[in-house]
Amino acid sequence: MAGASSERFPNVETYTIQELQNNAKNKNTSMGTKFWITVFKSWAKQKGFPEGIETYEPRELDTTLHKFYAKVRNKDGEDYEPESLRVMIAALDQHLKEQGYK
Image 1: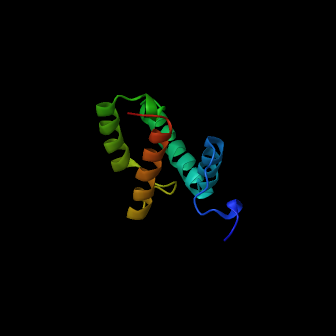
Image 2: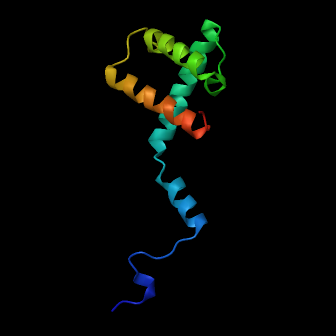
Image 3: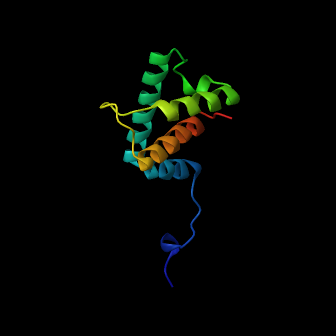
């Protein structure tokens, strides 16, 4: 039988769990989230809305995001593909979760 070092379910320390979580975060996900937050901030600034997405009250955020989703275009002024919009929504949601938004 194998020794304790090859246990299938060893005890792990809290810092190890945190380290695993940090390493599991996909680089592309982080870059995508930053991209879409930047797009939102740019849109908000241009339209006269507060730029900090996490500062909105929930109803206000819902209304603002509906406007944003309806109006956002790429740099060429063309509509984003539906898949891009799904990624955008997921990225904004991820950002809000990371910020502890209710």
